[in-house]
Length: 128
Image (tube, rainbow, N blue to C red; front, side, top):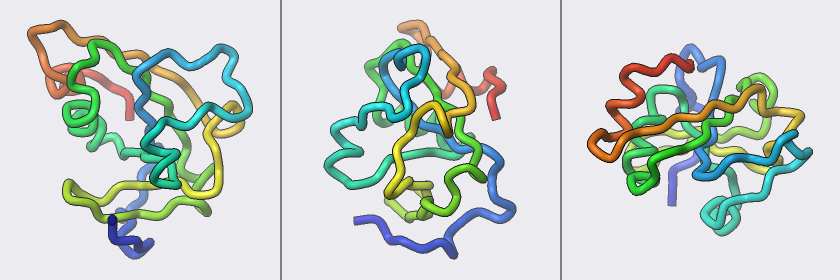
């Protein structure tokens, strides 16, 4: 179970946080995107700051060769974000709100070849 505390929030706070998904979201974005099985079972939406995206992809999406990154302005969801300490760092988790057209600012697609890792992809990517 992660340790919850908004005192864990980074200073200064990031402008954007990200949701990584393994399949293209519907276009146009609906008011509420479906929750992943993990988000549904944990009771919150798992998000990452820019510096965490490559590690999260390497850990949870290592078999995927394509991911979609939903960019969310922190200011739009900040009241429902809890910064929680897990084994691999402090992550933003969204409680009591869904992601969708009202809070997803943009959607980016990233691909990797079979001979490279997600870390390689995000070293050359500019998305923050």
